[in-house]
Amino acid sequence: MAVLVAGGALSHSPLLNVPPLDFDVQAIEDYKQGARTLGEAVMAGEPDVLIVIAQDHFRTHFYDLMPAITIGTGRVAGWGDWGTRSGELPADAHLARHLHRHLLGACFDIASSYDLTVDHGVTQPIELLGLPDSLPIIPVLINTSAPPLPVPQRCYQLGNAIADALRAYRLPVRVAILGSGGISHAPPAGNVESEDPAQAQAVHDLIHGHSKVLANEAGRQQRLIAAVKARKFKDSVRPEWDRAILDSFVNGQAEQLAKTLDEASIEAQGGGGGQEIRTWLAAAAAYGGVNAREICYYPIESLITGMGVIALGDNEG
Image 1 (cartoon, rainbow, N blue to C red):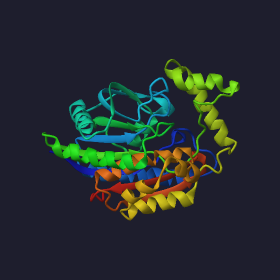
Image 2: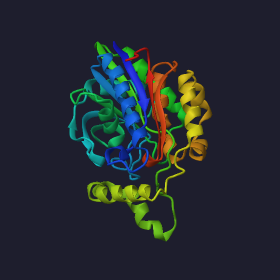
Image 3: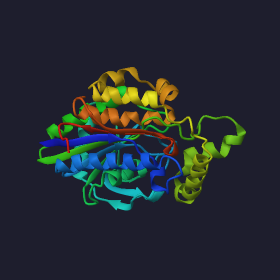
Image 4: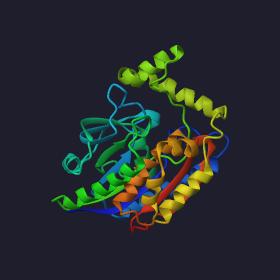
């Protein structure tokens, strides 16, 4: 049987990997320390494998075929975007394929990839936590970037099913689980259903962008950095919403939270990037929705994100 030995959830921001602006410098350093604290708790559990529940930001999945949930069941590699790890990453294909089969049996119509490339949503949290490069990972990507978005309650159910699958595994494996994303933020986003002729190229790229990922990466990063320097995202962080979300996890109310959230309410209160809270819900559900321990929270404008860290399970680090 595989056993959960540690877990948590945290925000990510690609802007953590560029030189900080002239504001929020101390908050960024304090957040990084909070992430390292979670990393110490994770490693204290002596995990053999790490399940990372994250998302793709239009680098691997496009609208030629947009899965709601995907598991990496073979080779896993990093895009290397925003200075994160590139190339092949250690993986546990045997356990990943067991998870996929079990989830199919539990009525989750979930995609699998035998050659999955992941971006900073997976790789940055591993680096922030200071986890060893040799720790095998199993990426579970929930689509949170654009419709179709699985409903939050279904994401909570996914975490329950992952826990069931681990209990059914025949080998003794120590597993840590991590939810990556959120909390509030409102990054620029395209609309694949736009009928505006001026958006025709953008719509095309949302559907057929695979061949342009590497070529477009530098410009994509430069545009975001320029927008942040111009403080175009000064209202992206919503501390009141973040506080309510964090309190739900701390008070052991993640399941109730999943039932109350929907795509429209998240967009209105937490911004489009707030949709990533689905990853936290899945990770919390794997632990039965028990009370989480808040490690830190900082509303960081220069990262355009409400940056929080919570620990799950009994491991205090």
